[in-house]
Length: 185
Image 1 (tube, one colour):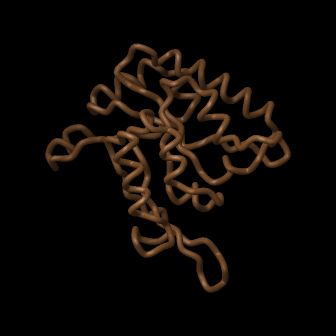
Image 2: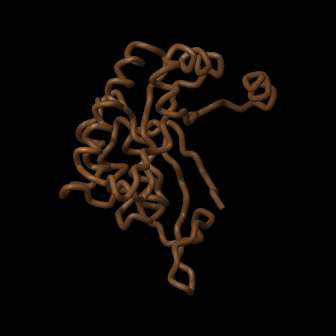
């Protein structure tokens, strides 16, 4: 039904999010659904450990588990990825989890960099897009501004503080196929 609606509107499904346990336990069903949609990309919407569990070994275990799931998709028509938020920039055992993910996840795992969340975590979205060049088919565009109360706030592209000319150059150079403009709030 979704494919019929997309086709009727002249739209394509760029990517989806799927829970890690579904990718792991229902791999063939996830692949079949994506083939039906003519969609080559799915990602998990992040890994969210509790603050009291935050540690490098926890993240290393997650990487090993995610790599095992990625192996189940090897040779299929669907590539799996990881969508970041800002917490992956909080150090764990002296390393930022996002850097561990980029370095240790199987190269077949693509990175769905979200510009807002990278900036929210205090880093440069363009620099992270550059780091994952060649493995970023989809990028999420959101802008970030600061309120008078000194709070982070999502805003429309161009109404915030992100360096869009630099981000757009990085996206083009990284080979992204899709720019997904979001407005979470």
